Length: 171
Image 1 (cartoon, helix red, strand yellow):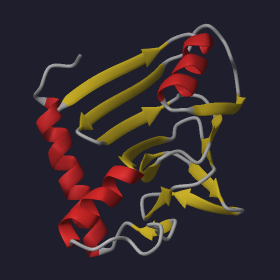
Image 2 (cartoon, one colour):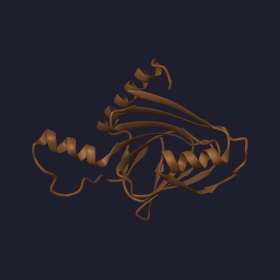
Image 3 (cartoon, one colour):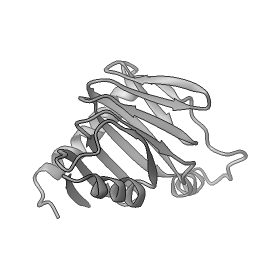
Image 4 (cartoon, helix red, strand yellow):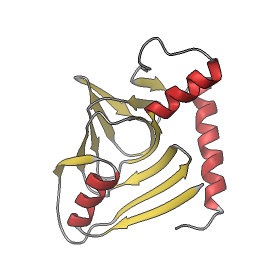
């Protein structure tokens, strides 16, 4: 288990973070000034990352088809994810699972939780647990209802992990 607090104050630090850590690119940023207040908190457990992201300014990011699933949950504000020609709102009642080329539009006050899971490792674990090979690539419906009981269970588990991390030192 590991956690990391990321605070960025300059646009060039933001570009390096977005490109290097998130493997994404900035499509549009409202004010590339020197006085930014960007915060991200990362919890890492094995092959799973849980991110809490807030940019404080409107920003549009582009993620290529990486080797992971991104599961987005709303915390506050306005966020929209665009994937495969469709737009999905990240709201209090709906989340998004993205797994291909994706654009994420952050409103000024948008805060989200993102769970990132490595595709190959997840598929490998499913094969190991089931004892059966996957017969086709693993896919998910992009939008999901946060009121669903299974989703609520996942959210509670994520919150439990975050509570555990909140009592551990930050690196």
